[in-house]
Amino acid sequence: MRVGIIGLPQVGKSSIFRVLTHAPVVESHHKEAQVGIARVVDPRLDQLAKLIPPDKLTYTTVECVDMGPVGADTMRETAYLTSLKQTDALLQVVRMFADETVPHIKGTLDPARDITDLELELILTDLSVIENRLARIEKDRKKGNTPELIREQELLERAKTLLEDNQPLRAAQWSDDERKRLRGYTFLSEKSMLIVFNVGEDQVSDEARILNDPQNQPLWKRPNTSGVVVSGKLEAELALMPAEEASEFLGSYGLKEPGRDRIVRAAHDLLGLIVFFTVGEEEDRSWSIPRGATAPQAAGAIHSDLEKHFIRAEVIPWDTLIELGGFPEAKAKGLLRLEGKEYIVKDGDIMHIRHSG
Ligand SMILES: Nc1nc2c(ncn2[C@@H]2O[C@H](COP(=O)(O)OP(=O)(O)OP(=O)(O)O)[C@@H](O)[C@H]2O)c(=O)[nH]1
Ligand SMILES: [Mg+2]
Image (tube, rainbow, N blue to C red; front, side, top):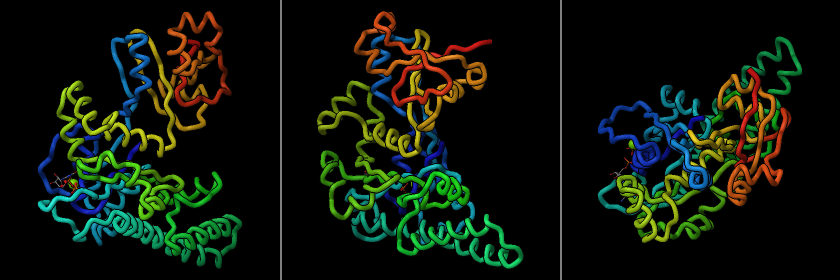
């Protein structure tokens, strides 16, 4: 699953990309998108590792792409558009930090304006796709009218009306089937979006005020959209510190965890993914699966053979295990459940897969 980092020029996209992926600074102005991997740090897994110390701790990951700046013409560049379409969700960085040494393309700090402008770029791009497709359908229907063509036309007409009303497709109500069909077009405004408000260090403890600002709230508090407040500069400094120093540094700003971890978790969530854990002496590990996945599908995330030869899963919610103090205690109390092929895995489940062969 891949998240594309977008935003106006000089808002801190590359800074945030580096913080998320631990990528080195690349001093080049080439336009290709840069790809990196972000760990989905999870305090639940840390607690499990404390209870049953493994040799190795592995977090599930999300792929991030630094898409480079969005300008007036970017959406018309084929290479840019192609890589943007290949993402599963968007992370929009919005500038809220004041710094006279960093030019602001629009002259003033106005996050709501910047979000709305970028959204409009996505909407216009989708509209042009729809208009072309509708013109084709019109022609095809003259040659031979089919129920599929009519169905497609209806869906696209509805999408068009929303877009013309400045509504991104992600926030509208669709049936599962409609959403699936819309996905086929890789519409940009249909992709889930995380808005990252990149603030000055003096504003990091103001998250609630910034998110609840009546200008900002309608833009992030809607379906398939989410918002976080971080300081790219502070995050960059944090990334260079040893763990102990970092937590002291965070504390001095009244923060509990790095913005980096909050961003990646929010993105993981918007991708429609949940986490399950495997716990053992060798390795404690978190895994990503789509919300609604069954136990055999979860087994398949570990290894395709495990899905094929799945018999049963031993399941316990992570917090129950912590509460009880370990597997022997859980077994004694009968709280290690045996689940079969139909079981829908829940976020935070610890799974042990029993398999044949
Ligand atoms: N003061 C301050 N400066 C920042 C912050 N985040 C980024 N910058 C600075 O802003 C400038 C642009 O940051 P980048 O991360 O390169 O921004 P970008 O969005 O990738 O820029 P383009 O790729 O050119 O569009 C750099 O000089 C950063 O050091 C921040 O939170 N505070
Ligand atoms: Mg950049």
